[in-house]
Structure formats: C-alpha cells, structure tokens
Length: 382
Image (cartoon, rainbow, N blue to C red; front, side, top):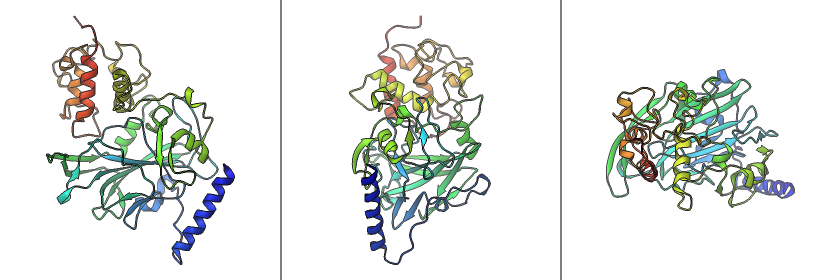
C-alpha cells in the first residue's frame, strides 16, 4: 500500500506540474503561533477559495459524522490536517491528537435565488473531492481548532461577501438571512457566529478542566463510510477510521467491530431509541454529561448514560422557571407535550431554548424524532 500510495502521489505531482506550467506551486499548510494568528483564513493555506472553488490543500482530509450538531440547517465541510510524520492515537472516548493538528469546519448553504439560501436536510451531496463549487453554495464561516502544546485554540473566521476569503472575528458575527424551503416557503432568521469564548465554552465538555477539545471527530461519530473523491489513496466509499489509519493520521485503531458507533438519526434500519440517543448525544451531550457544563442539572444526555432517571424520565428540573415551560418533568413517558425536553428543543426563546448557542431556528426533523421517541415510551410519572 505504501508503494502504491507513493507512486500515485508522484504521478499526481508530475501531472499537476505539467498542467500548471509556470504557475507557482500552492503553499503548504502553515501552523501559525498562538499569539500570531492571521487575520485571513487563506494564510493558513488549509481551505482556500481558488478558481471558483473552496479547495482543500494537500493532506487536508475531509470527514463527516454519523449524526451532526444542528446549526440552522447549515451544511458543513469538516477537515483535519496533521503535521508530516505525526498521527493521532486512538482512544474510545477521544483521540490524542498531535501538536500542530488543525481541524476546520466550514458552514455553508446551497444558494437560492435573490441572495436567499436553501433549507434542506439532505446532506448526501456534501462530499468534497476537488472542492465546493462556489457558484452553488454560500460560505458563511469557517471555525478553526488548532492543537497547541498547552491545549486547543478556537478561532472563528467569517467569509466576506465576495466569497474570496474569511476574516478572523474574535467577537463573533450576526447576519440576517432568508431561508427558502423546497416548497418555496421563506423564513427570515439571524445566523449567529459565536465569539472565540463561546466556541471554547461549547468545546470544554469537561467543566472542571475547562480544556477545549474536539467534539465531533471521535470514534463513535467517525465510524462510518465517507465517499472519498480524488483521493491519493482511493476513490469511493471507505470507512473513515480505516482511511485515517492508511493516511498515517491514526494509530492504535482496533478491529472495527470493537469500535463504538453512533447511528445516523435518519437511519431507518436503526431503532428509534438509537436514533434519538445519537441525536441527543451530539446536540446536547457535550454539556449534559457527568463532567460537562450542565452537570449540576442532573440531566445526562450523553450516549454513555443508561440510568433512565438521569436521562430525564420522570426527573423534575433542578430549577423551575421559563426554561421548564411550566412542565413538571424532563421526560414524561408517552407524553412529549408534557416533557420539558421537548419544550426546550422546540423553543426559540433565548431564555428557554436548548442548545443555548448555535441556532436561531427549530430543527423540525430532530424535534419530530424526539417527539416520536418519547411518545413511544411506556409508563407514566404519576
């Protein structure tokens, strides 16, 4: 495999030089120091707007998650890059990434007419080979996580109107947008880019340590096939963890049968409970876990929780108020309309909605799933 990989890279490099003529080669990914981060995303040379496409640099690998965090129906191009000769070490709970690792997440929408963006929950065309066609998508922001010797640094970049580059916005940003559904229904909303502190707050899923860590690229979320295109290893679908191993990005990977896996919340072959729990894990579990920022609530929504009371069944809130919607229990079996959990995920009131950050809209498909799950539960809280 190593010989085949090297020969393909060499052949690809020769072809690129022949096609490029006298053009200067693309600059390599640059890891800037913590106190000298650039104002422009392009200076990282990670993902760049080049010739009408958002292009990935050499050894910048796209990836996807089984179930992803909902962000106002935005689509996301996720990438990982590691310095040559380094790799992450497998861990079931999380990977030990090497210093210099850069993880990026670019938020974008399919373009509609008149400056509007299209609402769709279909992400089947989000795979990136040669890059995203900028004539078909509107880039909004790119979040960058950089592994330093003393921990991770979170940096939010906002794309300019010309879609040529993204600018560092430590204080975040807010943009009014018009979302158009496939049936033509339009909905105005405010897309909010969190500030650097808010990024760090969500990614510090261990409240006592307060350390920023990647949430998505963990074994249970990555254990799925990805449709690689124009890959130096192979074209076509392959398990992401196996691909990372072949790229030299991951060591210590056990047999796939021993690797945990969350399901896609839309996966019809999976049980209703598996789908709902996977949805709650990625959308709520980074705060609602025994070590997370919401640990004092006593409500644990991470995938590892199996105690039904801690999961919310017939559990009263620690503190009542507008966040409870005058409902008595987090989950009332058989009755989503009486459950605090449903009230909060269906709310857009900043004082009640959950998650607190990252959305202005209700995820209709996700809330419908949670309603169906709770409605199917036997028993009552009397």
